[in-house]
Amino acid sequence: MKNRFLLILLLSSIFCLAQSSQAETINIKTLIDSAANRMIKKPLIHSTSIAIVYQGKEFIGHYGELEEGKNNCPDNETIYEIGSLSKTFAGTLAAKAVCEKKLNIADEVQKYLPENYPNLKYGKQPILIKHLLSHTSGFSNMLPFEANIILQNFINHDTPAKINELYKNYEQKVFLRDLHKVKIDTVPGYKYSYSSAGSELIAFILEKVYKKKYEKLLTDYLTKNIAMQNTKITLSNQEAKKLAVGYHSDNSVITPPMPKLPWGGIR
Image (cartoon, rainbow, N blue to C red; front, side, top):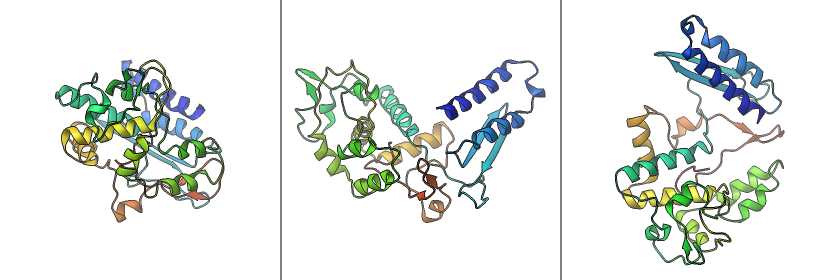
């Protein structure tokens, strides 16, 4: 949380600079360097990369070492996992679908499912698209449910390996099977409860309404609208070699990348 505050403080400072008539005289790179160097001194952060575009100029910095003790600093070719930012992308694509009248946030989720799920309601109150998007559906965080049990011991050194094993062959059909096991214990729309499973279901629905793979929907949108031409779900063998390694908690052993989820990395 402290590190997140540090990054927010950095971005807030830059925003304030942009409002100042003296912004051109400030060395933004110095500001980035100062914040990043403080960040990587934290015991659980090994490296970071920060890039900002301001008034048409790029300010890029790479800091620390990808592997502890190897002095291998990240560079412009390093690829990072983006974690739950993928949920923001899923929400953005859902908003696009609404604007294109392919989706209505007041629709029942059941409308888009291939079979009947009478469990996806509380009494007579069904789960709607907007409940998935706002994390108020009543879903647990993860499917399968075993993942939630494993994550209760999040800082344990073996937690990533257990999660990886659980998701190794977790395909769409298995997700849809597990969806029958969901139990809604409150009226949808009233209680916030963060849910990766809910975002996974949004991705499935987007595939149905567009009749296109989620990864294709995502990469097409990012390339066309945000100029993010190198953001993707599936990496080539060459790209996989550039993926930044990760460490879990205070474990000194590198953690293997998480397997791709049914519709690709909605964490």
